[in-house]
Image (tube, rainbow, N blue to C red; front, side, top):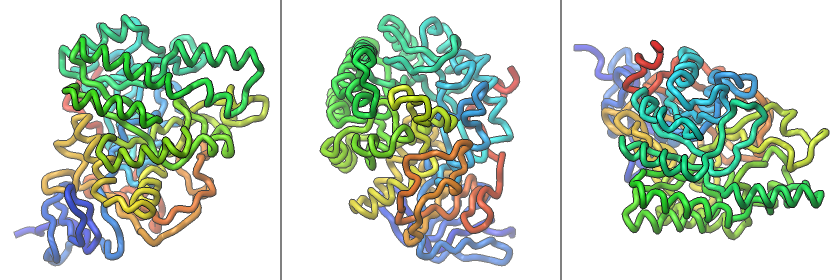
Length: 466
């Protein structure tokens, strides 16, 4: 008889779907083979001592911008996946925005898949995009393995002619009909272009350019209008929707009400909306600039209540990096600085620090939001999202007593700016395992297994052969 396991993770406080308990995890062939107390460790079985540590399912970050092809000098699969691994993430779903060409047809998808192959340190899948003129490309993209489609209801920004574009109402309606025809999923950046663009024009005309002025150009009502319009179209078309980076509890409640009425719709928020406020955006500067912007403290607290109530389904980073010069105030105003937060490495630690330590949320609640929820919504739950027998052995091991203050040199992303530099965390990711393989070790050299990530698509061979 051979070994029962290749590896046993022993004695950690394990976040299972319904409870957390001190358990061992036996791993064989990259899968979780057993979960129990005091699993037998025969000769030759590797042991990972997790006593005193939390063991969570690897984060499934369903919203990252790694910018290849064409924009790898902003962030690429090597550096971006390293940052994710250092933050306990074992799977990501990459967005079409900021790649050139953007992932709006099968040819662009093949280019993106080619850039990631043999480079990403963790497993991955891709979004496709819905833009004016590509409705006929949606079905081929779906058949080629994209997990969902992304559309902007406001201008996503950028300077090149072939960049990602926001949708008009007719494209949105036709795209939703097409996506519904194959039971696909549409993710939406929901801010009203009609409102935000006019407010931005007025601010520019009045010479208002600071953080408070930027926040004023993207009010909560712009989010509410866009969410309401998309829900109306969903009722008309039957399209499944996922609203990304919700910043306001009012919008989350609109989505929750639609779900109670029978629509297949989910809500995502991000760590920055849960740990930062509008005042922090002004204090930190462009490193904390994003759209939608951070809201006031009362709304931030209400988002935490909605997490506890189950109204929020997914927490994702919206890791949206850029060169540091694009975040600099030298020769720029806050209004003209690039909007996007590079925070993927800190997502799990933020949620554990703010959620579990400071607010008493059980570990399974955080695991559901950051792993199980996104895995289910994006069709990855046959392998990912839970610590359960038969699932991939994707684990994040966290030391709850390893308080530290984040420094620039701690970051693995290409450009080392973050709104969390200087922030003290009460806990720290110490090991990340992908399919039973150690990928990141805090005390063992950082990224110890680069480039081993796999494309999670049933048709990956077809994509890579194009």
